[in-house]
Image (cartoon, rainbow, N blue to C red):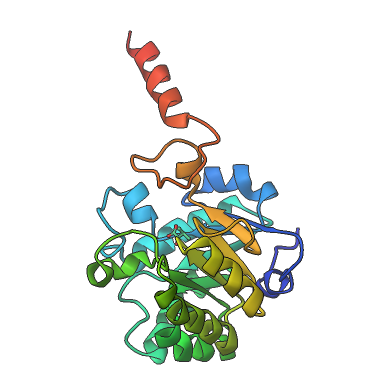
Length: 248
Ligand code: KIV
C-alpha cells in the first residue's frame, strides 16, 4: 500500500482536515494506522513512556528505536519522527547528519523539529537536501528551561507578531506543515489564514488544517492530561480494573 507522503500533506492545505496522532510502538501504530494521515513518533515518549519530567533528556537512539517499531507496525500513514533536544540546533550540517540517520535507520518519511525564525535556515537546508521537515511553534516543550512552563502561548496580543513571524519563516523556508501547540485560538486562526502550508493544531484552534493529539492522552492512559484534551476512552481505568480482577 502506498504511504502518505510529506507532499501529500502539504497539498492538503485548506482541504479535508488532516488527522494525526502520536505513536510510540508497533502494536498501537498498527491499530491506528488506517484512520490517520500522520503518525508522529513524538519526543513526548520520554514523558509518556519513560517517566522523564520533560522531553529534554530524550536521546536520538531512543527516538530511532521507537520510530523503527512504528514504521514496522504501519503501512499507510506518513511516519514523522521528532528530532530530540540537542540533535539539530547547533548547525544545519549537524541537523542534516542526525536527520539523515533518522530517515536511513527508521524508514520514516519526515522529521519534526521545534522552532520558528531561528530554525528557518536549518529547515531550508534540510528540505533542499531531501529531508521533509514539519516545524513546531507556539509552546515548544524542548524550550522548557527558557520559557519556564508548559503554559499556553500568545495570550497577549502584543506577543502575536513573534508567533506570526515564526509561522511565516518556517513556511517560507520549506517546511511541509507546522504544528501550532497551545497557541491562543484567534492567533492560530490568523496564522492558518496567513501561511501556505497546513497548520496542525494541538490545543490551538479547531480551524487549523489538521489536529494532532498524544494517543495516550486521548485514551485516558496518561498520568497528566492537558486541559484541552478530550478523553475518548478510559484505558488506564480499564487496565487497573482488569489487574484488580486478576489479582483478586
Ligand atoms: O512530542 C510530541 O508528542 C509532540 C506533539 C505534542 C505535537 O510534539
